[in-house]
Image (cartoon, rainbow, N blue to C red; front, side, top):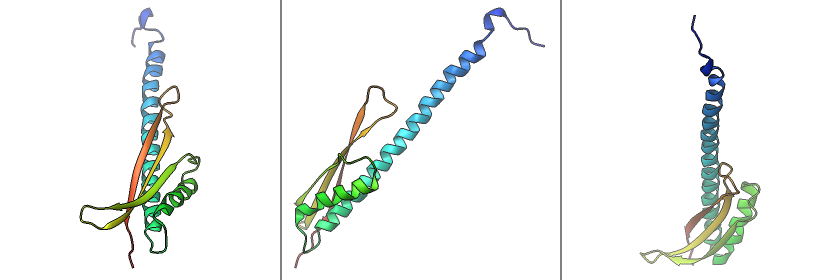
Length: 130
């Protein structure tokens, strides 16, 4: 039989609340990191697909940006604010490329006061030449 002091009454409840809040914040942080990584990976795949679209022989170099934006709107719900640009580029060895740059602002649910992070990705593809 344990003897409880009057000063220790209710301390288990306070400890549970304090530890529970820390675990909840840790859990929400893991969820937020997973969400940001998912959005980044989807943006990178869609930017690369936009670059491949614009790299076709019969496509203009600047058609990759709007194509990537349409892909992003359909693959990441609620990301209609994505901005993508595309244009011609040349790698250091002289191979003609098409480059698509996309950026999107992702809200951070764990951070207070509406904190956001901006994710920027770049997709490249070799331009087809006749």
